[in-house]
Image (spheres, rainbow, N blue to C red):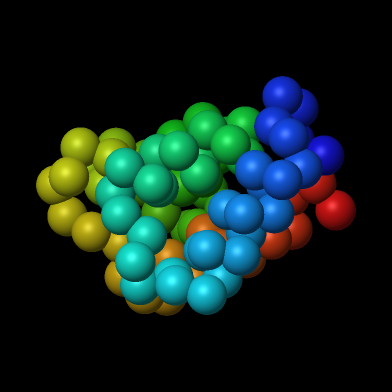
Length: 81
């Protein structure tokens, strides 16, 4: 379980992200990363990217591909068992 996050919130995030991965916005990327308890560098490592890529996404400079969005959804789905 992700510390400090209610199960209903986590379930909702998982469902929305799984159902609509294309709709994940750059601001939601930051929220999901924080929900997962990851730093920008940790998320970048999990996605096989450079930390600056995550920083740029969160600033609205560039956007993640569908492949990367799906990988973020997978990480969220795995969070908390």
